[in-house]
Image 1 (cartoon, rainbow, N blue to C red):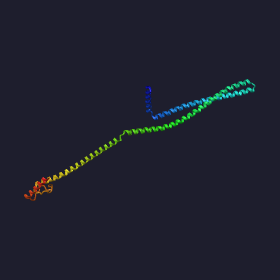
Image 2 (cartoon, helix red, strand yellow):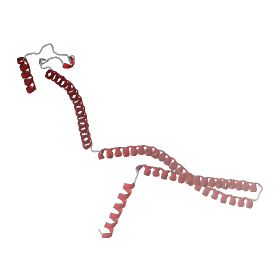
Image 3 (cartoon, rainbow, N blue to C red):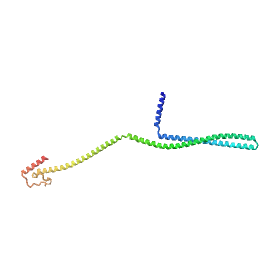
Image 4 (cartoon, rainbow, N blue to C red):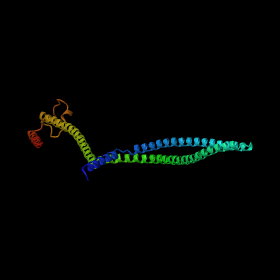
Length: 261
């Protein structure tokens, strides 16, 4: 194989591949039906022309046949009148028109056969066009469905379901983490309030104990654990003063309480 043949084959193969890739089934089917309809129009014109030619031949044949019959009648009339030469001339004219009529009859028969053939072809083409339209609609619907299915499959192929669900799982973990932090902050805030109220409550007890201590220091005669001095009447003197042994015992108890506090 020569170089030119190889290059020619490569070019033709590339062109065929390019044309095949550019073919759209829907457009090709539509164009094919249009081409068939154009052929139908041309065939109808051809049938119309053939029918017109057939009618002209038929008219010419009828005229020739009429003339042939007329000259035959004239030949009979000439013989009846005794003019044999005129009858002979009439028969000669009749023979000419008869030959013309026979020739036209042959052409008319051929034209009739041609018209019948063209009519059958036109009928067959109309049937093929109707069938082609039906197939075109069916194949167009199938092509559109196939394209839609192809697009869906391509879209699904571009989607990585594994990574997508992994992303959902990661986001779910983050949401759970955020919820946990929010719950922890709420719990800490609640503990802070509880601690504040506990501090207030404990602060009240210390204040009460401080007041009691002050009252005991002002009135050494008060026993340990006595009532809140705020409930005592202000400036009211004690009824009796305890002896120093009682005071020392209470002071020692107070020291023990302070040391154990």
